[in-house]
Image (cartoon, rainbow, N blue to C red; front, top):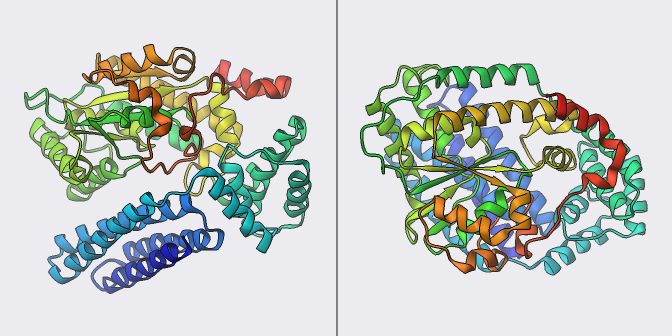
Length: 464
């Protein structure tokens, strides 16, 4: 595995050279952003190599592919054929590498052993500890909790929050929930200082999106255009990975994961119109939306080479659902919902590699959940019959009936293999990757273990 990861780092460096070649062609601001993006990829790759972490390696390949795709698009616009071809060549090699990694995906026992090996070399390795915790299937022993408490206390680097999240998991495993919550408060506060969040500003952005789609634009008349696309909309930790795993086990559906193509199409149109999203939405006619839909289908054609339909579960889908519906009249949408207290707690327990800055304070989580719920109500009202609500708790208690209803919504025949989703060996690159490799659990609730300690959260959600 180390050989594959080292090979991947070589491509990261190649990608850096490619982006650097465009320094004179791009503005200083764009170039700086691109270099930071590639630089972050290299950091992820180095972490993957040092910890021998398969999941991080797969994620790094995906990030690098996105970076190089963006570069290829830039060279195409600026008519630099040599650079564009070079981008395509590297992307083709990355496709081969990604398939190789998929073919050699380690099981959970091997992943656990790899993290433990990394910790024997460096007992304070924050991301190896968090990697173990993030498998979700590993139970920490009392000795692990003691070691983590010591490392968390002594660490003064930017990786300290990751140790805190791992320590909280270890304390939970020892039924020390009050201590776990104290550690979560501290770790989240540290992470929030690294990634500030303005809940009021975000709420205003949601207001703008809702106003921009006060009336949905008329379609070109082809109600089936875009029926290949299945969009999954949800908050993190709400069952969206499970939903995609179930649907992607159907022989007619490819699971594409958290792809960025919809956001990229919106960004391209913002650049073309010189208007920030969603300012141009109400100015766009049916022909414009159709053109954007065709562009999205062009970008995602790689997911339909073997199966006719595919899933898109980008975390921003709930914000962009109105745009996707306008672009693709035939597309269908799934809204994954989970008990809000469980969702909030699960987000608060999670160290995210990047983004999701709203998850590091309970007040911010409640505000974000409130904005999510109100916008999803808007989409369901304005798109009758196009949004299926998948209740996580219903899926756990009545799996076959729920899966049948879900597949029927997509016009797909029932396939019993969808109930055996954990046997699907497709690549999964989310925090729930290990969990969807196991049969459906009857219960996934955790908040009850914290009892009255979470009453302030429960009240805040009830009042939202």
